[in-house]
Image (cartoon, rainbow, N blue to C red):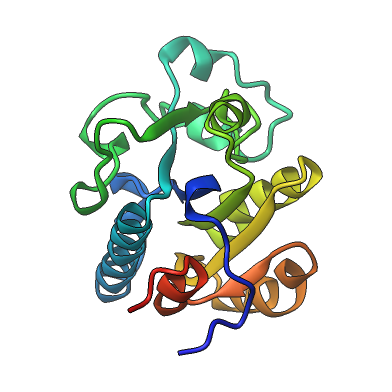
Length: 200
């Protein structure tokens, strides 16, 4: 396979695995979620083998953070009213098949984007990362918000078209085909070894 985009330097590249938490994955169709998790596991293995960095972004609130969500926040007010998205516990953990390893980047956020309430940018900078590969749930949530913010921070961006999912198939398609290509290269998980220069 010939890569559809220029290759990247693995040592300066991080795969961000975003919001692959049990209570989020469980909302997807069971067959769809199983295939999605397997593809992202393949992407993680590819990046690790090539010498890249793997980072995990998850959402969760302490009781104090839940209480501090203002009523004007349309996204999180409903969650707060229902008791919030707990920062700890089995439901908020990254699903077992994708679990972080020692040395990985792991951040917890309290808003949609991966950078918005975390020190992710600082951690990436310390590792001299300038290229991000994105996988996440949902395409119209964390993936969209993170692409916008990361682009403004001058990262090179790749988004895995089959490493993301959204409750709306239409939204996923429009974003992947019409919106994301303005700021990111859209590739499939199978292309990753070639993009990383790791294909044999």
